Image (cartoon, rainbow, N blue to C red; front, side, top):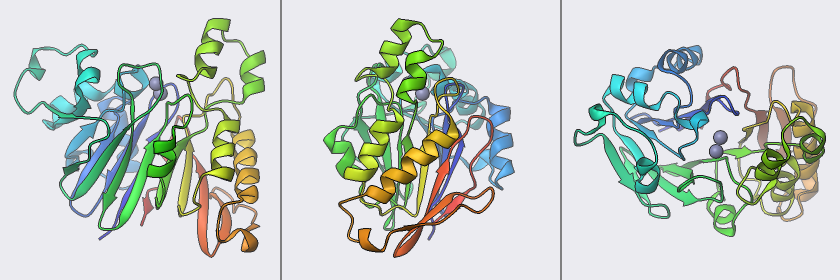
Length: 284
Ligand SMILES: [Zn+2]
Ligand SMILES: [Zn+2]
């Protein structure tokens, strides 16, 4: 039994994550076109043809750009909340039964051997959710597009082997950056996106340190810089005060092209998801 996770790409131009067990392959959001999704999967040795379902976190374009094309081509169901389905435009080809599987945020459901738990998150969309995935004791979560971190999210991401978590913007870069003021306000609001500092606070105060792989995602290309994201997260992880292994914590310099490693009894890796290329395929 294994659980594999690959963030195919993440940012304002497209988001999609591949989750698979030995039996079940899932796509979380379909922010890239069918060809691009296929190419990114084959770059990590995976095949879109094996995908059994697409899960939709919310209706923003960067999460559904390729949704209709991929679902129609593969003839696979779209797992979505009723409110999110109702704000997306569908053509007649989606009128067939089985096109949608409706979930309710907060209620666990199964796809094959994967237990999926959708969590309501604060974001300026109809009914946005984050997801946790569990299969045979292995756990992953995809948590992006939220303005702040509700308590239930902090609880639900405990024990993850792989945690994909938003670190969208640097507050100063956003403040002085080129966005119009109303957009800046939207991004910074409680229904916008998580800043590096909000994520750092989570990592130092609430995160349980259990993940073997932590992937920071949905980085803004305009209002953030990967090195700021990495440094802020590494500092926060070093300060983590609630972990049983805090005393043996030690930061190691990252090997070229690999994630930053920090040790805590077990090896943990920090990776940054990018817009243009998939992360490695992480296997647990
Ligand atoms: Zn997004
Ligand atoms: Zn969004």
